Every structure is written in C-alpha cells, then in structure tokens.
Image (cartoon, rainbow, N blue to C red; front, top):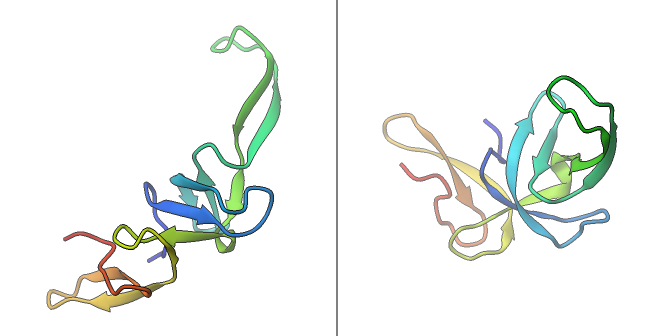
Length: 106
C-alpha cells in the first residue's frame, strides 16, 4: 500500500517545481515515480502518425520521483507524512501525521 495514490493532492518539495501543488494523474510503484498534473512539463518531438496527423513538439507531464512529493492533507491543507491505521474490519487507512485526520474515506 503506497502513501501516494492516483487523484491525491501533492506538493513538490524539491527540484524546479518546488512548492507547486497538483493532482496525481498516475503512479508507477515499481519504478517509484508519479506523474503530477501540470508539473514537470517536458517537450517531446512527435512524428506524424495515423492517429496524430500533425507532428511537432508537444508538451506533456514528466514523471517525478515519489520521494520528491508530499501528500497534502485535506483538513489542514499542509504537506504531511503518512501513517497507517488498521480498522476493526482489517481495512488499512492513511492518516495525516500533522492533524491525525484520516485521509482515506470509508
């Protein structure tokens, strides 16, 4: 179980986008990387294809190492570390280390 998941709000804590906030679009746990919406933009030189008739230089999000982002708590709106609690039914939930609020609902 990862501390950062798809659709979480995160803040970049180091690098060229330090201090910026965004939503996680995808997580690659085997590589330890995440893609954050509108952050770490890279330029890709694209050839024309059957689907994409127009070639050229396109901008898209590049991946960021998971250690360079911190989860934003929904309650205190600050970057936080994550702890895990186990509920009665055996379900594991993420909890904010700053305020103690459950990040996962349910």
